[in-house]
Amino acid sequence: MSGVRVLVGTRKGAFVLTSDAKRQRWDVSGPHFAGWEIYHVTGSSADSDRLYASQSSGWFGQVIQRSDDGGTTWQPAGNQFSYDGVPGTHQWYDGTPHPWEFARVWHLEPSLTDPDTVYAGVEDAALFRSIDGGQTWQELSGLRDHDSGSSWQPGAGGMCLHTIIQHPTDPGRIFVAISSAGVFRTDDAGKTWRPTNRGLHSEQIPDPVAEVGHCVHRLAMHPSRPDVLFMQKHWDVMRSDDAGESWQEVSGDLPTDFGFPIAVHAHEPDTVYVVPIKSDSEHYPPEGKLRVYRSRIGGHEWEPLTKGLPQNDCYVNVLRDAMAVDSLDSCGIYFGTTGGQVYASADAGDSWTPIVRDLPSVLSVEVQTLP
Amino acid sequence: MIRVRLPAHLRTLAHLEGEVQLHVAGQATQRAVLDALESRYPMLRGTIRDHVTHQRRAFVRFFACEQDLSHELPDAPLPEAVGTGTEPFLVVGAMAGG
Image (cartoon, rainbow over all chains, first blue to last red; front, side, top):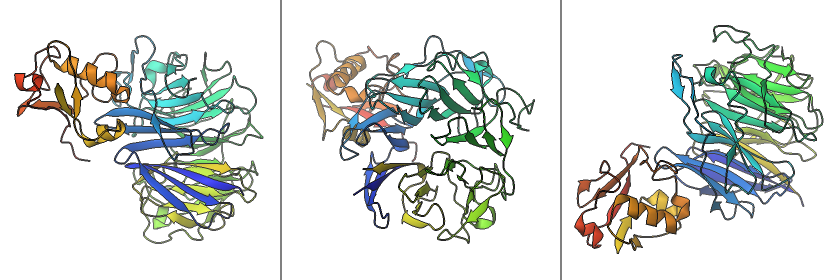
């Protein structure tokens, strides 16, 4: 019987939640790596038993953990992330040059076909790849060496590369997103990159339509339609129908178009989910009501999903890597909050249940649909 | 025999309990002790000092014999009591909340 494994990264450890396909009763294991910040835990689509976790600490730095048995046991892998050559500088918050310094791994993205190949998006923004199961890491420095690299600047959370999306059939094409630089695309497996931000408008930068400098919070793609991308930006929900060549705003009737995560239904490529947040300084839901918004037509028109979610006095946030979907027939949607709840919907968002409610602040949620 | 006492998070990472006992050839220095420690427990590389520069991480301190040795040169001799194993060499996470 099929089942679901939800991988949760929190400020103080990782948790693995498992259920059968009914998704009604959940077993919780953890905390794994107790006391450490777990920015991301994820699994290989080529081998569901292969998991990777980014474990970090202000005291002891970065550790990468790897599991070969679905999270029952873990082994430390390689943790040396050295920028290629002389790293140079990027812009600091005040516009002055600041040396590139590795801080942590925000996001791990295993290859679609090889469990030993995994990409890492790091702060200060760069993309690394391992082809030996996480033992050694090499920077794909063509990204950071882009002409615009010295002008990139951090968002409030640091200058992080947080999104990595691989084309489902073209191994040369990868999209990444950086706060606050924007979206970049490679068509040669990471050797060269170009910004793909035309159509974005950000009033927080000197030229609101600049090629680079936008605070993109998250991208999502449905694998059946890889030229269509959805974006939650600092402000604005955006859509591209041409693989990032151009973007159009699809915020439509959302109560606020600020937010962090965005996800696409597993079987309906035009069904999209966001969690509107009041503003860039008020990181909680408008009116204290936690609402997921769903569009069935790829944006513009959105419906609030509230059944089972707190509709009074709720002031949590949902971070950019903290929403995911399963691929069971009735698509499951999952998200975690800074208040430590993980909510799940087994009916595509119509109703929600907290499957665990008192974890440390949730940084990331990933879902594996198990055979 | 050099005795090394690690903070709880690093003991967990290295899958060990209690103190570490290390043989260090020649003069006992911070560098020699940490080289021996990382050689036996490779997963600790990068968690106490930088992989490449071997600079101590900012929030890690080294104590021994009720002294703060964090700012001693890496090749400076450690106190004799550490070298003889009478006193442990302490790797400590800085008191920084959290």
